[in-house]
Length: 502
Image (cartoon, rainbow, N blue to C red; front, side, top):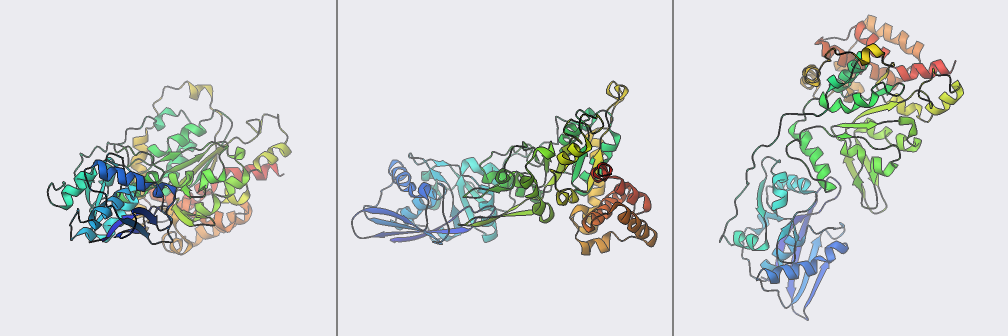
């Protein structure tokens, strides 16, 4: 046979489109051509494949070799096609005879001695191969990560010789190597009991964790804003398998190693205020996920909020609503998931406190105006943290631990999943009419409060969602006036702006 068709996969954002590696051995002067929109790293695979084949004691065909990576209009990059190209040459030259070659997919970069090296973005490839019911030949270095996907057929290889031995049934490789479950119970270095005082802020943190709400901490320096935000992940519900794999897939795209002992823990991202919109949202000529996608199913914490550029903050507005971010470039368009929970913190004045009389109301307003109204409108919970008294600082009274709070959060979280299949913060208006129905007295109260506080329609609906979460934490079936009053109380930033505008 002088023609071979081998299956592999490219990496385009979070997707892994199928690539058919077609290898043809023809007559003519010896040559080696790769076509199908290969980038430089793919073109260089010619030398890697030739050396790997010769150093693995295989014959390299003295013919005109043409490798086509189909579809031809899909850009290909990286060394992930080396193994598929090498296997294609062996099949086309008759050194491997395997009638079932169409049932396999191959990914891996070749070293010059024939070893198979690991590649990035292995999880999207394995998930796509599972849908096609194909067995994956993948680098041994990637196999433990690929084992997180249930139901996929895979064989881990260390060298080209092992692939040859398996396909000819001379030395079959083990199918689906099992690894010990090294996932540990959450053992956080940080704990909510480390934070002294601030019962109101802890209450708001619990509501945010239970309902998936965005949160803003407002207060002078040293009141515990950052400490509370860093402990958010310790009280959030444990991720499901699907959530954990989708988050791990994003990290595998950027080549970041994943610790299999705590891969179920929710990510916590804390970008510096000097970061650009591309770093936050994602981008570059070959689009990569940004901080908001790396915080998928976890927490994105923006400290010193007014110090971020306004256009950087406003670039978050759409992902906060949709849970995805679409990056469009001239050559390609990619979509990444970004279902993050936003926590922000800021001082109410450029001097630290708006009551220290070191800044005029106009200066404070200019400082706070760096954060746009539509951005604040998308934050469900806003609370001001008071300064701690010396008695609170020196208190030895034991505070509530993260484990105790997480137990209540998980109880409320599972109530929401059972009732509507998602957290309250992600309910749309149609679903709210079903699951957040208000009685006549509550509707009248909310209407009066909305007029008095000049709530936007978005803020109006977010107040109802927060009230729904508070009632879930209580285990109540319906939303009462008490929950609505508490939800309306968490609009501290808007109250401060109204106070300064007088």
